[in-house]
Length: 371
Image (cartoon, rainbow, N blue to C red; front, top):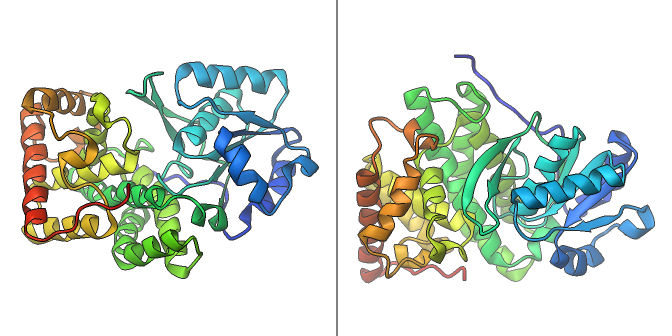
């Protein structure tokens, strides 16, 4: 199998990075359109270092879910207005909707994340959900975004829970990359991981451990610091390159399974992925020291460590088995792990992680704070 890796065309990060947008649109085409949520339009754009009204860049409002209906609606708007550069500005679902619509229209997409809650911005794939928020499928684009603009001043102003959730998503990158390398499983590019992909994934994990707590403090203070810059880069660039070029495994399959339970829908992607990492460590027989280090990190920055932390305090084994079965569907990346993965094993891993989280808490571990 060939080794494969993919990257966005440009990655630009720093305070005021959004000022690069007008020039990028002109570089890539003639008619730009921004897809943004109402909150981005009303709260974020007025504080930006560039006046998009003066620049003549229109805004289309995102309607809340990255689903087939919303993608089709946006695709029609792009066609009607003869847009040749689409900009996705907001959180993961806004970005994914823009990426899929641009791909279907065969036009470049520029991504401007306003929160650092997932590694979606740099990737050439996007997750489609049902209109009710249940995971349906992964959509692969022909190419990664033409440009990713990360204005750290915007991200610093966002609620801390988003940054923490992004660390939960990024936390999975190294462990899933390692599993794919061990089993020589296919990555999200359709090949084996390159050495660069593996090292980027490892750097992502090391950056989280080194700067995560300090970045959380900076986020709570709404200030830009070197630690915040490092974690924003880890959440968006390192995790994005790492998961795509090195591969996914148990943690994201567990996340996908958990979306089948409505109680989890109010929790962010990265929060559910973080619990998926903890359960995945149980599933793959990680060392006690490694598992303890990941638990400690989650406790310190406020990520879920028990089922109750993701809304499943009252979910019995029968309900959890629904998530386990979905996580083990034939198309899920849990099968990139070594050995045979079954719903029974996944259920036991979730229960073991939950028990460990509860035990640590009763022994003085800190409960998640990012709420």
